[in-house]
Image 1: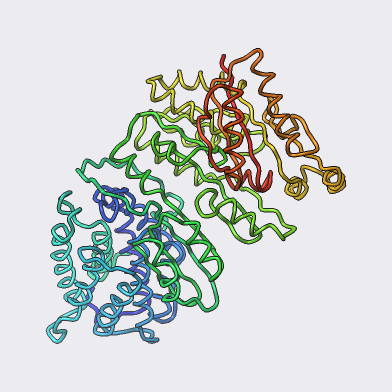
Image 2: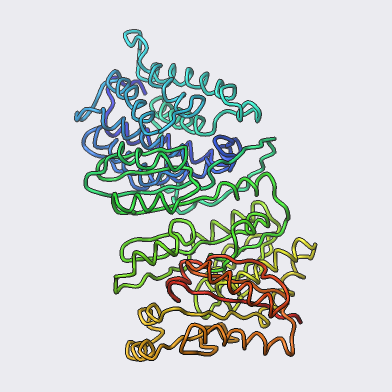
Length: 597
């Protein structure tokens, strides 16, 4: 296919071909992904972006408009560090392209060279030996003495050859790659893309769009045996699609750069894709919320991913939802997996315990008649989690929030049945609890796993403990119960007037209810003490915990009081989830326990 000029039709078909080459190599890219973190997801991230490009880009009249279509799709679909850098390269390529219906090779080569600067400019701290290096070589090699070219394919073939030479050198440019004896995964992804483009110009072959379906993105089995001891300084791979009318990429970079590393900001004035590795994603989203509308957010726990790949402790996974209140250090130590629910406030969506804290959420809603709500996970999220766990574990024990309160249990059950994962055992337990009581059941499951119990033995033990578990919530204010409709406005007004202080609990079916009530805060505490003492006359408390919403001081007071009554310290004290904060209100303190058999 010897061409002198390049049309929008050529660009459209060539880029589709290049994108399909990346998608077909997803598993290989995952396997060689060791920089900056060995989390085995570069293939998935690039594949996600490429499938968005394939499904959402359209052929336009001019080359520039067609490239803008690919660029916009890439920004929307970009995932991970490599994906966002790639998207910004395409943004630069479209920006530097003329408005002509067709262009010559020299113009394409010059725009490709200039696009590299956009990719470098999107990164706070560019690193050689990565995708950037092969991008730069592609731009340089395309611009050799073009008077010697006999065809477009001649120029592109020469450039691909030089890019592959640069790609091979990446394994010696970074310590992580040299130790693992692999090339950089992102650089390999870019190389596959330009090889696909070049193949199109050589053959004229087009891909069949039906052969690549964006909905088919699933986690693939990854078998990584590299001896990598990556030290993760910043835990959360944080991404955001931000929409606005006059977004300033440089300003966004300046406001975020103190929060972590691997900062990439790609896009234009209308839409930007942000990527950063940070230990405080909630702070990052607090900043971004002020700059524009958060259209999409994604946060991956790189420490958890790394531990699963490299330091997995068991063949049995424990999975719960973020309503279960468990300290992060306990979750880490026991490699507990968590499905984080979404918190919706007006047109904003937050990720529970990740991109929003109870304190900040209550600040947002304090003077607003609109109460934030929680949203159960969608089927695709559950599919990805279960498929991911099936790649590394032989079985999973899922412990969910009470199905009387949430559809989480039902949706996980439905997805598990639909997936029908062979040789991967799934048991799903309805805790009939929430918050601290649900967390206590999950923590107990982790303890039993550490004691060496089998999958079936753990399931049996937890199911027995469900009926012996209880939560008692000391509510500070009735405001949130009134807003949520749990108390009518009239009843709420009366309750506030007489100083009603209910002790909230869940019944044996997992439905919300009142354990008791008082008319002072001290009276509420006395009711909880009375409940515990009554139980201890005929039973022994096996374990208990204390959770709170912005009230560590009173939680510590609870610890002193109930250690004296129960005769042992709580298993832990921790902050409650945003979901609990929304339902019960600020300054809540709750005690949960499990009775011995």
